Image (cartoon, rainbow, N blue to C red; front, top):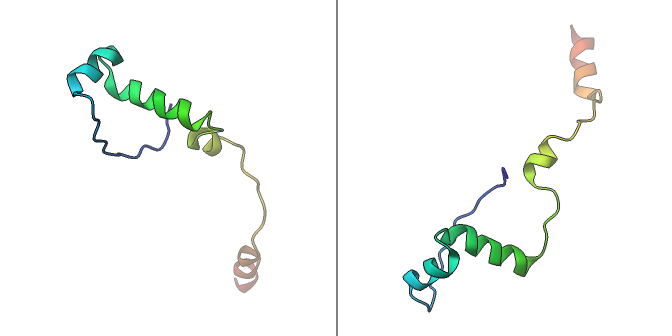
Length: 69
């Protein structure tokens, strides 16, 4: 997915073995799915933002630099 990742620590009240059994073996993916459902669908991630075409514009500093040469 290419998203920025933060690490958080949780202290579940249910034993880890039981959570792994319910998650199907991939506990991180399962917990991330729960969080995403609770928070709601996110809009564009950083990778989509960075892939957008960039605007080209002349900077006033560039013009001053060229004039001083």
